[in-house]
Length: 216
Image (cartoon, rainbow, N blue to C red; front, side, top):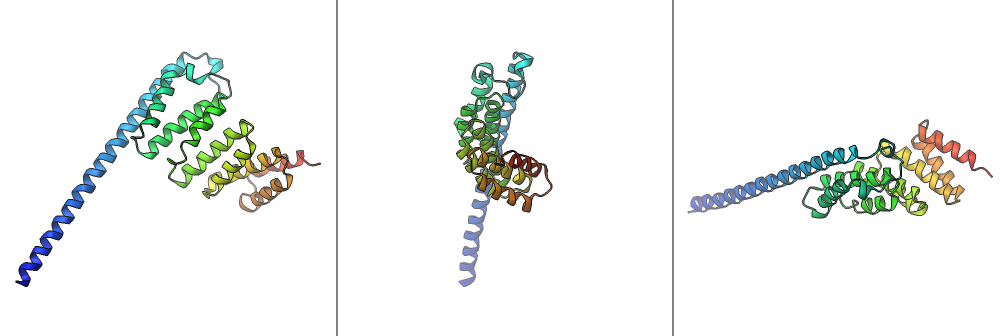
């Protein structure tokens, strides 16, 4: 009797394990399909961008050239916005689509639109590197739009992700925006932190020149 009962328990347990395994399998299959569909959508948008770029005069293609992105790249902007609005793709695909759109606006001096796009990516940035990169790009965009307090906050948020490769640039941004906010004492504190954590790097050299130029 006990043997039969144990067999029944084992059978039930095996059934639960099998059902769970099947559920995980199909969930993973669905996730892989969504990711592939998202990547395909991004690929098509990139091809569209290449086609639309051909119609833009060479002088307007350069980064830093003021350009009405929505009118020059309407299909590209629409395609990226569709990916972002649908929310069907995995976070990493949504993140990449948003970075592409935000950078496109930023490259052509449409900072306000770039800021709106980049702020919407905060929930899609999952890894420490993605978060640090996003906040660095957002801070750079806000700084360019003369939103220095917001830029300083963004650089600080990026620094909290503790990504070594971006630490120097984030701290440099904090020195730079502090000086633009006329807070030389805070700028010096950030500079001291740079000398402790990223001594001898290009950002430290740039910060040194900035502080020299702001000596009263």
